[in-house]
Image (cartoon, rainbow, N blue to C red; front, side, top):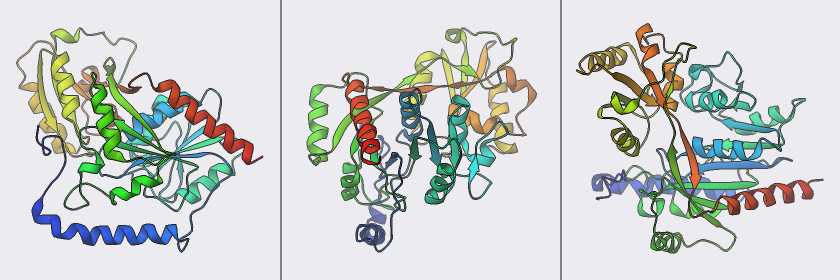
Length: 362
């Protein structure tokens, strides 16, 4: 498989521009490192989850994994910038929230965990200050997609990289997909290699660890995506459970790196037709008409429309979604699973950090 097939952009024509971009990113990091631009610290554990590259490495499902891990013992808040939302400033998720007000990823997290404090704000420092001023202030704050947001200094920083396009094989924008140079990995306390194959061989672990050249304090973990059972986007009491083996599926997805999803849907369904959009795509009237036309053209008595959970969050509030879709529109949930039986090691490492941080701040 070529690097382009794996999703890595390598455009030699844009290579001369990469050093200019890298110079700007490096200068910015130096100003933070030297304290010329200050980074705020806070009296609660702030766990940052991010990446060096543009595109999906699985930040939202890993954030949810942390939520599931921590919420039984701590009051947890999840904070993101709310990418592509129509609102400005600090917004706290509630029962009236939709993708337009808080963004699709924040809404996805809130719908799964309505008891979770979910907030969005491009200014994370301001948002954390507001969260900590609440009467039910959080014990732990999770920062989603905040690796380059250095105005806040996380107490713990987790860096994600896609197994199929690791950052050490990539290049700076606009030649490749890196937001900053590979040296930025040294700010991470842990690196998680995401989207690993189900049958990862021991040699793969050793090769990746060798390529990363970790510092002594850095931890390395590997995770894979687990696809769960499909669910209706608009569930009702009269919803009928479908035998998907007999169904034809029209897959619509606006996510980064959709290839693994497409393969999974093709594996599950007897027939799969795919329409792909850009990441975080907002479906307009023409998109809905195009999808409806494609669905009508599927010559099968049993068929459904399938999408991702993130796309479902946007479609929930889409005024162009026709009424007849509400019986046939499904999404495919995913969750994260640690490889090599390392989930206990990760949980122990994370809990040690939280306990040590709290002890030191008493």
